[in-house]
Length: 171
Image 1 (cartoon, rainbow, N blue to C red):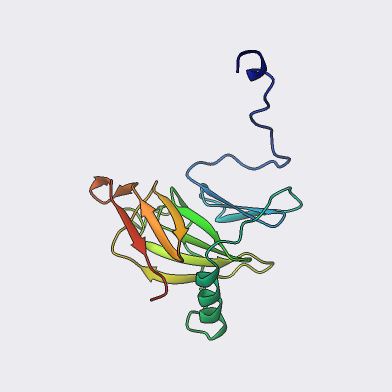
Image 2: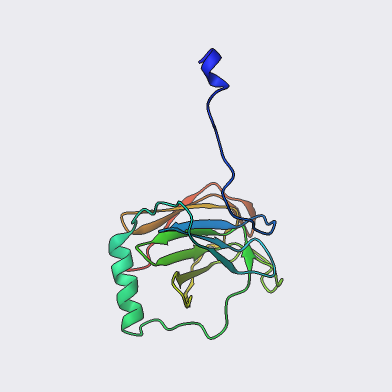
């Protein structure tokens, strides 16, 4: 380790300029980055032509969500959701993202959000409200395993949370 340790490049600046923010989430899709939340004036910002590799995750969930959109089981929101911070977002399949929780900038929610949204990541972003779950969270972590969302920690209405729970969008 010794001598070679100082020669390792640990990071490099990505070739984009974005406004300062905190509490946001980031999704890579193809050669695009989507920065969601973290500012009161932008819900989502899209940057293209970047060297980002995409992972196809939650494929069965993706297929089910796309079918729900196609068959109008869920319809696009007429008004965008409130801008937010301290939420989580994950890529789902080739052109969807799932967003959960957070704190809204408009102050309408007095405790962490329990809302779940999907958004299409294409030229005309469409937002869909999948409803609310029992637990509101902000500053939590979320992954997709076996087509279910696993959520851990964060802040709930009564303070810091240590539990892990599952959000099963398709039953």
